[in-house]
Amino acid sequence: MGIPIDEEDCPVCEEFKDGWIFTYGDLVTLLLCFFILLFSMCKYEIEKFKSVAESFKPLPAGTPFMEEGNDSMVEQISKNVENTELGDSTNVTAEARGVVVSFSAQAFFEPESSELTADARKELQRFAQLLFLLPNPIQIEGHTDNTPLTKWSSGWELSGARAARVARFLIETGLEADKVTAKAFGANRPRFRNDSEIQRVLNNRVELIILPVEE
Image (cartoon, rainbow, N blue to C red; front, side, top):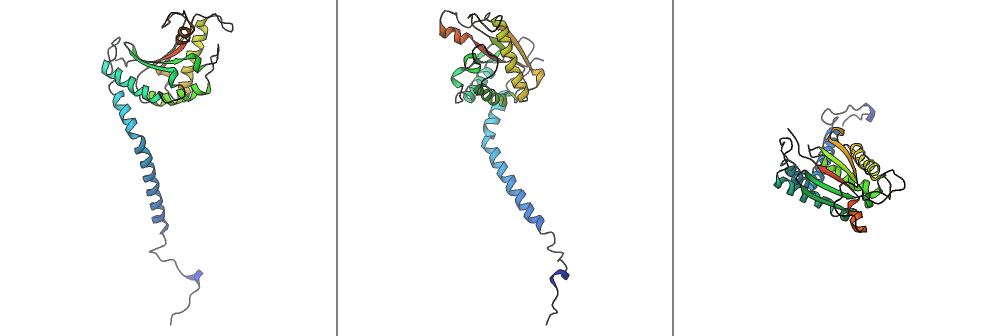
């Protein structure tokens, strides 16, 4: 017959006194599996975009992008923006100077305002995630139509304020400041003749140009 021992006086068995470590280890393993699953769900698109980004090799100054890299980048960016709130107001094209993403000023700003709308902020926030993967410098250009303004001295001031606002937002989002420049052109570089309301709307824009990486 054993001698009864008070529970408080019973020493903890060496074999089980660190048993909590095994439970903790199982929990960490389950969390790790969960995050691996989440990452695997978006890994394909990230890797695909990275493979496109790698086609933008450093080029001698003044050399345009390789045409193949341009087309791949345009396709990837277009897919990224086509289902967003402002997808219909965003146009992506390949040009000799780089990949040009044109945002409608009518959709991004209130009339004669340089403050981004809520939808514009959301669109740029999403778009910035792609820019983070690129080593390329980014140039923001502001453009207006030839409509006389009441709150600004000229379209040059308004287009400059809008370009600077987009650039500042991207930098605040996390884009490196030394990669971003802003330029203003006012009504001096229209894409279409300012003969109709539709043409003026199309000319009133902010363009984001993904420039080639120079050696």
